[in-house]
Structures are given as structure tokens and as C-alpha cells.
Image 1 (cartoon, rainbow, N blue to C red):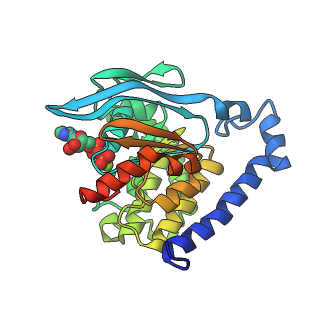
Image 2: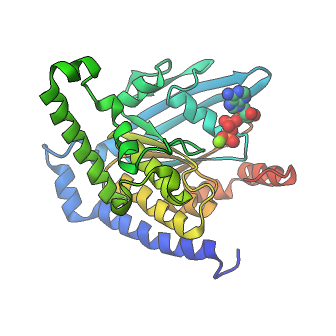
Length: 309
Ligand SMILES: Nc1ncnc2c1ncn2[C@@H]1O[C@H](COP(=O)(O)OP(=O)(O)O)[C@@H](O)[C@H]1O
Ligand SMILES: [Mg+2]
């Protein structure tokens, strides 16, 4: 890669972010805060960061003659950014679909904080604290930014239609509380001026940002992001990378990221998993994975077959 090319400059800027991130993790203030016995439950304790939060154990999924995912095991530790990479058709989205309950695995087991979620429905998985975004934007384009975020809270809403009629005041109070969560997210994602805009009218990068907001509105403990930077220009990618780092660092949310931009993946991930033709072929730190002969071969093979990595 030539020095001075856009990818390089993104990397340089993100290295600064990562350096800040390390400082934030080890700063005396943070250590003191996390050492407190009454610490914020949204912030994982240091000892939890090494414990497994989400466990995928020997999971497979077939579609007719196609094996999308074959015998894949992944342990997602608390509080980090874990990236899943691999050529097109490697099974990345299928894996995310199984975690979030859109597909049921043919074999294997998925557990969240020790609880079996293998056969849960998507809304049940969401209610347990796993939110996701989609490879192709899935927003209601006729609804405003704020309303899309409010919809993201549906599994947290207790008042159904009947309850709302009988207990109007209660439903109103609940709506105000939900609105506050969404307004805070709108500030966090710098969408203040766009809150009343229909999402269909927004530029692509902004719609992706709203989708991140809709997932965050669930107040998840884990967020699954399926190519959140796909189709973005370099500036939009940089913005999104910063939001992902902030989601992880400031909100203590574990991130599972599928992304094709290797610069971003290598820069912001704590751990990288590589899939190829449904199988896990490598796992390790970004540096370890980059050196892996199996990974290099998989990507070279994909290029020869004219698939994009
Ligand atoms: N719902 C489905 N029906 C049939 N085949 C599917 C379905 N979902 C995924 N596949 C197939 O599974 C394989 C893996 O796809 P996918 O998980 O989307 O890969 P990736 O996200 O890594 O590009 C592909 O061959 C794809 O065509
Ligand atoms: Mg995919």
C-alpha cells in the first residue's frame, strides 16, 4: 500500500484513537472506577473482560447442498471488539444470523453468559441483550430518525395496546423514558439536526449511523455489526470506526464486527476470527492473523476467483 493513500491516513488516525483507548483502559480513574464494588453494571469489571460472554460451540448450518457454516466454535470475551473476516460466501452473515436467532443451527450450541440461546427467536435474543445491524440497511425509510430509534426499543417496551388504553398515564411515562434514551443516542451519534428527517432522505453513511443507533436503542450488552462500513467513503468509514470504538469503550458494549476493510479491522479489533468456505481457518490477534499462511492463501484464492475479500 502506497504511503499517503487514503487507507494509510485512516490507519494513522485510528492508531491515535487506539493509543487513546489503551490509555483510557489503564488510566487510574478507570481502574479506580472498575475496582469499586458498586460499579456501573454497564461497565464490565476487568476480570470479566477475559471471561467468555458469548460462546459458539461447534455450530453448523446447511442450505440444501451448501454448507454455509461448518463446525465453527468461537468464544467472545466480555468487553472487547472481535472481528470476523473472510472472503464473500465464507459464512459470516449466516453465523451472525444464527447468533441473533434468524437462523437455527443444524448442529452445535450458542450460549450467552451461560444461558442456552441456540433455538431462541430473534426478539427473544434481542430481549436478552444482543442487538445487531444488517449488511443491507434495514430501516423504515418513511419514518423519522427518532421514530426508527424508538422502534429499536420495542423489546424494552412493556405497555401493549390494551395496557396503553387502560393505563394511559403509565404508557405516557414509559414513552417519555424511551424517548430520553433515544434522544441521548441522537446526541451521541451527532444526529440532532436530523431527528425529524425521514431516514429514506438521508445520505448512505448517515443511514448506516441511524442503523447503529437503532441497535443501540435496545441497550444491548453485545452488538453484532454486519459490514457497518460497506459502501462508505473514507471519511464515513473513519466516523463509523470512531463510533464503534466509543460504543465499546465508553458504553462497555462487546462488539462483534464483520468488516471487509482490513485497515479498520486490524486497527480496532482485539481479536480476529477468519472464516473461509464455512470453516474457521484462523484466530488470533490482528498481527497473528495477518501473518497466517492459511489466511493469505484464502484471500489470494478469493482474488483469483474474482471474489472481493
Ligand atoms: N437463506 C439462505 N438460503 C440459501 N443459501 C444461503 C442462505 N444464507 C446463506 N446462504 C449461503 O451460504 C453461504 C454463506 O453465505 P453468507 O453467510 O452470506 O456469507 P458471507 O456473509 O461470509 O458473505 C453462501 O453460499 C450463501 O449463498
Ligand atoms: Mg455477509
